[in-house]
Length: 246
Ligand code: B12
Ligand code: SF4
Image 1 (cartoon, rainbow, N blue to C red):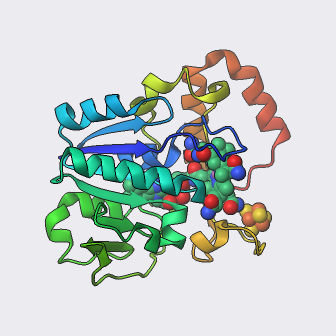
Image 2 (cartoon, helix red, strand yellow):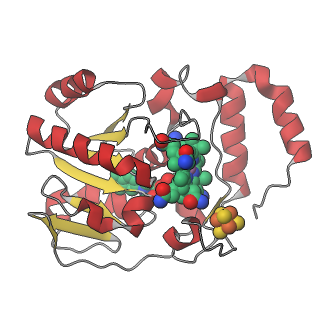
């Protein structure tokens, strides 16, 4: 199956520079190694290149990552654009905003919504997008004519073993654009604190999950392989940071 994973364009309202790698999409791509996956970063692409990709790449499924509330309007416009190009494409959305406010995506241009972490639900869905609607998957919400149909909203207790190394080869073409030649390294999911203004612990369903030290080290060794001249900075980082991993 061909899957196109899209990171939405830069939002005008953002105060933080957003040119960091789309980590969630790289991780999700690694959960389906037997499928053809392409990551399309709309911060560095435009609508005509997307149109070309949809018409000639002929994806079966197109997924959008919507973590931030300020990305919602852009994402909805993109979903509209995608369905207008080819209404047979299955459109899916996931991310923190989607998890906390799925109703923003109850619209005819969305086929499926992913709630919470998707390392388990995404490959289950991709194994058979049509039939997965009938074999309900926890955390996956199917939409028909803009309305949700039966679903299992339940979050699952993801384990650190299920989190793969991100597939960074899929964002190689954007590496020169990705800010300050950085790689994002995730060491934990959720948060043990409960600040009332923050979305992190709510989106993680009150769970705090520490990632494996081996994954952290593999991420670092990847980074050093592509940017060997930053070896010194990496050593300094090791010496100065106490990383919350088990
Ligand atoms: C790294 C990060 C950034 C990076 C962005 C890196 C990038 N390219 O994605 C930077 C520093 C640039 C950034 C900027 C901003 N950020 Co920020 N960021 C984060 C942070 C710390 C981690 C996100 C992450 O990569 N997690 C790791 C991945 C693996 O997890 P994940 O993204 O949740 O993905 C999982 C699921 O959500 C799901 N999923 C995600 N996408 C998809 C897509 C599909 C198709 C499917 C099926 C599933 C799925 O599956 C994934 C695997 O389980 C979160 C806080 C947090 N701890 O989560 C805040 C967070 C997302 N940021 C937030 C905000 C507000 C912003 C800004 C708007 C700040 C500002 N005012 O400018 C800007 C927006 C920039 C923009 N895009 O326009 C808020 C969002 C809250 C909200 N409702 O809007 C958060 C939650 C922080 C908080 N404390 O509230 N951010
Ligand atoms: S702001 Fe959010 S991520 Fe930071 S300590 Fe508070 S709950 Fe945790």
